[in-house]
Image (cartoon, helix red, strand yellow):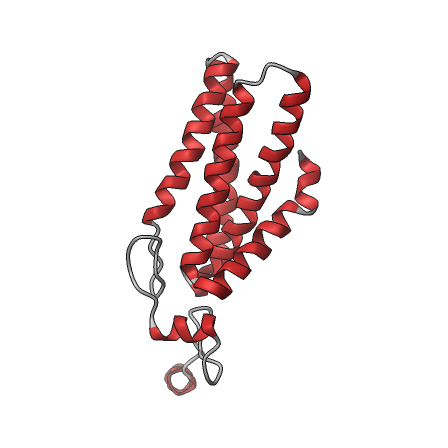
Amino acid sequence: FGWMNLFARGVGGFVSDKANARMGMRGRLWWQTICLVLEGIMVLIFANSNSLAASIVVMVIFSSFVQAAEGSSYGIVPYVNPPATGSIAGIVGAGGNTGAVAFGLGFRQLDYYQAFILMGSCIIASGVLSLFICIKGHAGLVTGQDSEEAIAAWKKLGAPASTTLQVPEPDTDAAAELEEENA
């Protein structure tokens, strides 16, 4: 399972970038949704597997979608709040660990079949909830519109447009005034 990090997470981010180049944020969100729904379906299939060989094959496919979904998540993170990208990335990473602990507790309290069904259902539900993600200046899957700036950035129209990833420049005049006041 851990070996999938070597390529599947990168592939998830790469596909997210390619989807962004074709459709903007809506492409990233579609890829995220696809990964999550297929990941959840693989858990449900795994829960119903009757042979070791089938279980291993399904687990490898499941793992690929888990890591691809993680890669796609980190493709979305910089757009949420550009000046706080590090904080947002930390929250996303902590969310993954929180989910792992929650499902670990589920496996302690439920029999394995019920725990896997719960886990797969929650993953599919989170994929469906991707329909409602709204990021300022970008179209969601079912709501919103891309801003002119975002469209110019992903369609690469004309001169390089400033994007939502641009961090504001410090106001040098205000900084000079503060220095004079403090001196």
